[in-house]
Image (cartoon, rainbow, N blue to C red; front, side, top):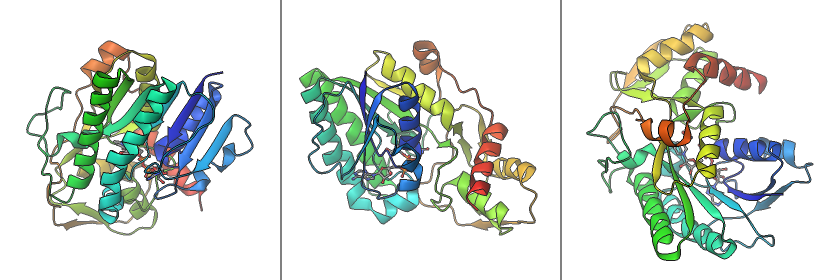
Length: 310
Ligand SMILES: NC(=O)c1ccc[n+]([C@@H]2O[C@H](COP(=O)([O-])OP(=O)(O)OC[C@H]3O[C@@H](n4cnc5c(N)ncnc54)[C@H](O)[C@@H]3O)[C@@H](O)[C@H]2O)c1
């Protein structure tokens, strides 16, 4: 039986990873300190004898008594609301937390996959973003704590690969969405769904023409699995190249939720990216992966999830 450790297991992506690998009959060890995650996302697995949960901060040394085959490092605040609330912790998790995980990987001779992000490209001057683009990041801007934490995570992971011959994977995830995102985490899709369900105004930053691309969680999880099973040790983009403006996203949500909500415009946040769209040619070629769920189908499932919470 393969053994896998998932950090950030009580979060949005981590909890879906746990479900996925339990279904594949792996023994799953999960770590989380509930900084931004919730027990509700994993409690359905507490009775599963192959699921072992440890409440722990990845910035502290990690002891797992069994030999691990794989480690997936997903612990980190991910939404702007969260990392702006925890700027120093975010940097420490990217630095100290990642170093702890990589050392555990060396000890276990495990494959270590680390979650990076499209935010390493900052407010990009190249469009769509290929893995070869170095990015346009303001290190001391409001988003700098997250962007630089992830850039350091990539640098450290790559150094462990070169110096300690650790078998690594680095995934640059573009916006992903689906059930278990916190409704109040400030990211576009949960925010607009929440506003539509409550008939409150849609809050749009700037003129709403800025673009984003959204990948449904099941596709993201499949991409993570394919990367893990590959032998590719450099950064790779996983995301949906279907690009739309924020105003078009609101239109799509209004097709699913009939609402009286009006749009109100607010100031565009400093250093917020104006365009965001992955070039996924590398993932298509190396992993034979591309997203299969279209935006509307993904939104319908996400809305159903939020409605089921009431
Ligand atoms: N969701 C996205 O669109 C997206 C995009 C790019 C990258 N990512 C990356 O994927 C990972 C997961 O993102 P998410 O959207 O699931 O966020 P999330 O906030 O839902 O999950 C993060 C989890 O990490 C846990 N955590 C935070 N600090 C910790 C610590 N010190 N020790 C142990 N656990 C800790 C939190 O409690 C939470 O359960 C993050 O690393 C994020 O940077 C996510």
